[in-house]
Amino acid sequence: MNEIKKMHEKYFRGETTREEEMLLRRYFCDLDASDEQSEVRPLFTYFAEEASVNEFLRALREDPVVVHKNKSRSIRILKIASLAASLLLGVIFLNRNMRNDYSLTDENSVWINGEKITQIHVVRSYAKKSFEKVKSEEDLLEEQLRFVLE
Amino acid sequence: MKRVRTLILCCAMSLFVVSVSGQDLQINNIFEKYGKLKGSTMVLLSGEAIRDYRLSSYRSITLKYAAPVSDDIQQCLDHDKRQARKIKEVIRNGVIRSGYYQLPDEGKKINRYILFKIGEDQQATLIYMEGDLKSEELINKLFLRE
Image 1 (cartoon, rainbow over the protein chains, first blue to last red):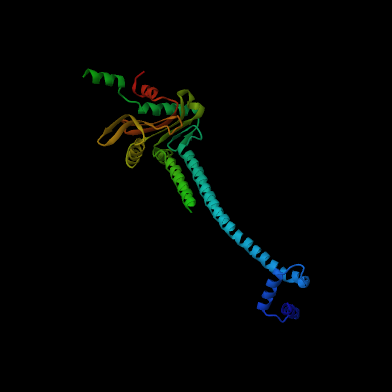
Image 2 (cartoon, each protein chain N blue to C red):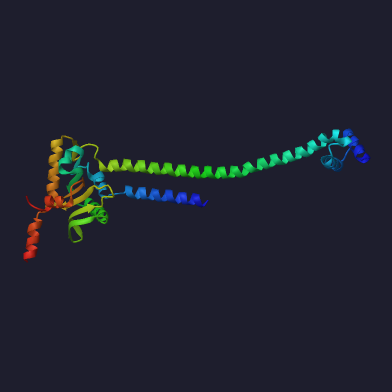
């Protein structure tokens, strides 16, 4: 007991070694509250509590690292997904534009030797002419009847 | 990581599907390339103007059938007819002289047709049309004299 008393007096003088300080902490942590030296106890138990608080804080700091890792992964996935989605939208948009260009159906017109005519009766008459041109010269019914009769 | 890979794969596949479906018809190139040139007649009709014919879009081009136009047309027809149903086709010396094809509707429930013929005057006419017009009606119009 005296030894402990001497040691904590030494502590207040700032002459204790690290081992002695640890011994003191351990001693005061186990000390009964009714002990006469219990008035200096909070000083040493504070350090012990501080250590556990530090440990807790350290654990807390480490935990977010795991969370952060998961978060960064999901952010990466989101980034890739949004990039792919915007690419997809871009392609669809381009595709539509290209189709519109190809379809050339913005306006009813006829192009004759590079000249555009939009008068609808002219356009219609040229459409009829073009359709007449692809018509079969032979009558399918006649052709088939001939085939059957042969 | 596996999820990311799956995601990338899905995106790549959808990009592929979109880009492939965009290359729909090769004959579009013929209208694009030669439609506004001297010696060509290109008709573009859509909407109300052709509703009476049960069509929503009509495109035709008539031009002189000579190289390189002839090669281009034959190549485009060869490509497009692969996915189409043949209504009637006349091939002479390996050259499509006339062809009437019905294209798949791609789930849009629209009938699409490609009509082509080389006339005796060596003028080729290529037509693309789409609408409600049934193939039977088209056959009547094309092959039966009124």
